[in-house]
Image 1: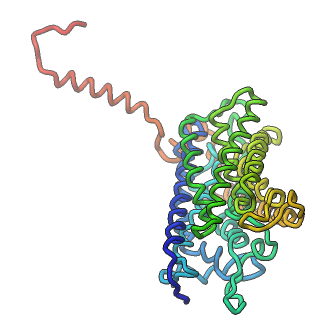
Image 2: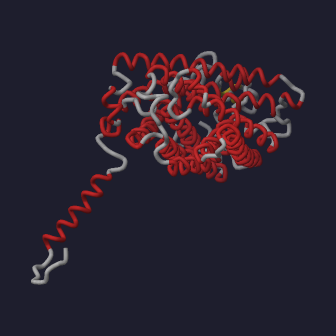
Image 3: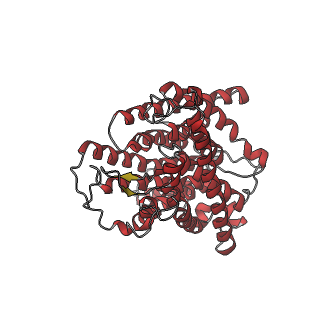
Length: 448
């Protein structure tokens, strides 16, 4: 075990970034919660908080080891026993950064990836089965894919390999700075698979299923934007110039994407909506995630603006293709993540931190690498998520009954209601009645 002096500045930045990314999951809960109908908002938020609780434990037990343990075979997954329970890591400073700081940072990525999937199956999933799905899917899909994308091979000063990482990062050499493939394509493909397994909501295409609270949606989008600076700039794992470039690109692309989405809405629907602004913000954040270290600020504007327009059009695919992706996980995360990953091969600027050149700079070499990496993650996640979801539906039951869906799964799954107006009015009536009983006797008549 090598002990090095800790770089306090880098350590402070990565721990701050981890906290920012952790905040994104409650932000996602608000974003998703506001988008569903009032009778299912608690269930929607619980799915995000359930993922937070679940992955916080499994990441320590074996998730980190599968994702960042020494490769076992062909760059597919790390040794699950190497860092089992994070044994021996509490005193390891790594390369000037406490190993536990990196563990914490990567944990929050795993958490939000699982939480993202839930938006595709809003209003109709059993909470218990969702938790089992999250456990299995994260184990056989997210943890290995994180190894593929985020685990880099390292060598010592003598050129001897000290750690072997995943195949996308080291063999394919596709660029995914902060998770366009590992997080967004991964979650989007799984969401599509589960939407197909569970089927359409009762009344889909017939009944209005409008967001019940756009204020929550806007608040959630704001928290996601705030936390995403930790998501992207924190992935530099250092407080340096590259992190600064990534920060600016993230801010710029996100604003441009919101404008792109609103422009499409204005042309198509004659209105620019708050839901469109919030969705455009998320689409831009998703698209810039893999490419934030590869493009210039001007490239980020172009990439983000196109992402907003593309995703605004893509959310309509569910109506044409007939799958009920409740909260547009496919249209925003799968499509936005795919576009952002491919866009590295188009807009990459050699002066950006990644140092690669894209198609617009005269090189077509990177674009095929990006495409192969994106498709590999998409297919792997979709196939396994569909298989896991199908087996759980046939054994435990994944979809709630028709009666429970119509009643509202907040009540049937959690025995709660997000907005208990009855008790509020009841409390007022009770208070008035008590005032009458406790009032002192008087000979003076009270006018009717």
